[in-house]
Amino acid sequence: MKGISFGQYYPADSVIHRLDPRIKIIMTILYIICTFLCKSVTSFAVLVLSVIALIMFSRIPVRVVLRSVRPLLIIIAFTFVINIFWSTGEQLLVEFWIFRIYAEGVWNAVFMFLRIFALVTGTGVLLTYTTTPMDLTDALESLLSPLKKLHVPVHVFAMMMSITLRFIPTLTEETEKIMNAQKARGADFTSGSLIRRAKSLIPILIPLFVSAINRALELANAMECRCYHGGDGRTRLNVLKCHTKDMVAAILMIVFGVGLVFLNFVPFIYVMK
Amino acid sequence: MDKIILDHVSYIYSAGTPFEQKALDDICLGIRGGCITGIIGHTGSGKSTMMQMLNGLAKPTFGKVLLDGYDINSTMEDVFEEWRILPEYASLSDRKAKKAIGAEIKKRKAGLCFRVGLVMQYPEYQLFEETVFRDIAFGPRNMGLSEEEIRERVLEAAVFTDIGAELLDKSPFDLSGGQKRRVALAGVIAMRPEVLVLDEPAAGLDPLGRSFIFDGIRDYQRKTGSTVLIVSHSMEDMARYCDDVIVMSGARVLRKGSREEVFAHVEELARTGLDIPQITRVMASLRERGVPVPKNIYTVEEAVSALKAVFAEEGTK
Image (cartoon, rainbow over all chains, first blue to last red; front, side):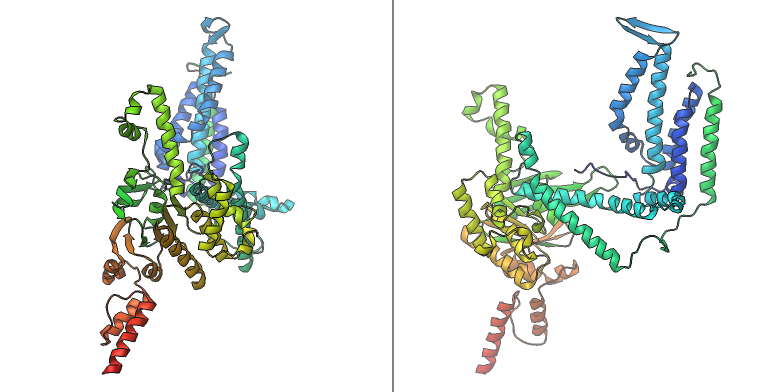
């Protein structure tokens, strides 16, 4: 239960932490595009360097960043193997039974691995590790605000999202508390047949739903008591402002992407077709 | 020997992250069997964590929790050490021995929560059954008792907690806050634990609700001779119901001893920001003004009889 942490926000004081969250979202999208632009050894080398640079700038321990890759290891390994065995090319390396491994296949597999790695760590460092969930929803609301013209209730969605995010830890804590209370009365969640185990969840789920519904009602009352009436005309405590450093960061990201495209034309060792 | 012993127990939250926090710091404690022990301390002084350790819900990061002299978190190795000298063990093969030890540990763990009944903070959220009766019966049913025995225990627990027979067939969600609390308490008492641990059992209740709860706990303790631990920050309740008091502050034990011993250190308690019972303060200021009342008064009843004695003396003069 302890493992559930939505938004892996890691508190630190760094350049990336202080950037405007809207710019960070845009930069993250650009960075994802960048990882797919890479095609040559040189551009991938620069991509790896950029990951290292981002981690250094964010002041997040490498150990923490690598932890975010762990759940994806199976997918990475799978694509790696697929690429090695199913790519065809001109330079045959090994041949046994029905398998033929080509140099191109090995390169593609390595590139794929680096791409996923950069994708996960890059987005983590640029966004989820360095931005609080609240900042994230605020930024989304601001970025999506043009949709208001099309009568999309952007504010309502953003509010729903921030309330959800806000209550995930609360509900987790609550679940843990209820589980402990029922365990203290001898409830057993881990043994017995599947049906028995499913039944053993009733003593957790009923109290949890009851309290979640009560909590929602209380929250709605509390919001109404403070005259909450939706997004129109509402001012904010923290107004997002775009500074020069944010613009510089965004421009650097664009330059980085353009640079990668140029590096794809450097015929050094191997270039993907 | 003490019923419960905490031997150099420490507990660290989220070890190895920036949120690391020490909840308990090298606690050594003995808790006497067969009496009511109160634990006072600020929020965040590690009381609740300590309570959850007593029935194995939380495991100490370091140190041991002993119940009747046995480590409640004993591992494979510990049981092995214990059993090595037994003749029955020598005849078993390695695999069988391992299996037997595993089963023994499981048995000990399962039995533990019935031996040490834990009532958590705001326990009314744990109610889930259709009727009050069935909810109280949840614990005894998990113990695998017969229907007759379950019935007997539920009714007994209902008497202790002053739940009328007419409530037993109601839905627990239709009850008032205080009644819910009592049903939750009954759910634990129905397991007849030899150690009853209560975390802020009367938090948020009105005075009448408080005394219902505490009287029920005291009745249970008196009739069964079990060991009771109550966490609270109400000095009044502590003074009224507890035999021993433990004061915790900043993850450590500040003071422990009988009620009289602990409340004698009034200044020290005041310095940690804990309140001494109101009536004790009133008596202290009376004494300052020259009224000859004794020093160790902690409940209103005691104060009344002390003042009566003073008036009687003045009458004779």
